[in-house]
Amino acid sequence: MKYREAFRLAFSQIRSQKLKSAFAVLGVFVGATFLVTVVSVIGGLNRYMEEDFGRRIYGLNTVTVRRTPSVQFGPSASARRAWRRRPRLTFEDADAMRDRLDVPVMVGVESHAGGEVEGPDGTNLGNMWLTAASPEYFAMRNMELDMGRTFNQAEDRTGSAVVVLGHDASEELFATRDPIGKTIKIRGVPFRVIGVMEKQGSLLGISMDNRAIAPAHSPMARMVNPRGLVDEIVVKAQDEVAMGRAIWEAEAIMRERRGLRPTEENNFELETAEDSMSFWTRISQILYMTFPVLVGIALVVGGMVIMNIMLVSVTERTREIGVRKAIGARRRDVVRQVLVESAALSLLGAAAGIIFGQAGAQVVRALTPLPVSVAPAAMLGAAALGVGVGVLAGLYPAVKASRLDPVVALRAE
Image (spheres, rainbow, N blue to C red):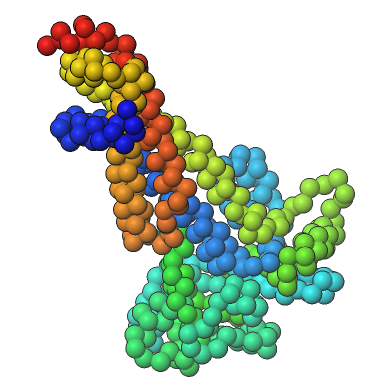
């Protein structure tokens, strides 16, 4: 029996037993849908974290000096206590970086806190993201302006009370009016608006547009930190080679300023975007290790259902098999027919799962900022698993059918 004939007979049986076929493909359908959706979502999360998280929060070729790690993935209580005992970063630490780093870099500082902002007509925005930063902040974080300008070194040095607003904050405070030159109050202190940032969107569900950024030495400095202290010192190099050297030099400068002996560990953190992404890499690896188990369970269940359906089908078609063998069909022809039918059933389930998985990925893409897309490898993998499960599930019924005695089979009712 040729494969074409085997496929024709297989699809004929599937069409004649629609309900059984539907039950048979259910398990494979669930497994394939799960595989395609999960692989697509994890892939989208990886791209989102690498592209958006790294670009917006850290910027390219930057290293950030902090008192404690920015992402704390399950630290022990003793580790947290040790971090709290570390000395705070100061403006003098940043000045030392500017003066002593040999590699060409840009050095800036920034500190953050939450607070209320009041517009000129009394509109009050609570829990705004307040940032006191040096003028380099905008270039380091790849931020563009929608209107106005950023503050300069002179305004930072003299502590001018000027501010750049996030896009949403400007719209809520001024609606359609021009905010440039207007005065707002941040925690009761008047600031003059000099610029508005382009819309940044959200990151991990947190809006990047409800914020106010003022010079590091402006009155906002007192709102975010005690006098003379900063949260972060950011060093941005021109390329990866320069950044590697800048990391080494910045660490040496900080260790010298802290008076650390060669055997003592750093009492500060040096983080690049790649370092801070390591926590997500760990989560991603756990997910990739876990989901094959779940897919496997679904496929095993699906395979068992297909095998039972095929056993029932072989029993119901005993007389038909006897007729085929009586007119010359060989054992391998019977095996081939049953295997093709079983594989076709499983492949149908996998194809439906791929379609639903694609639809699920599109829903996730529409409802979230994740750049979810279905990877061709996931679709091919689902199809291959479908065929494989079908062949394995049909093996025992196929062998059983091929061993039927033609005379006994022809007497079957």
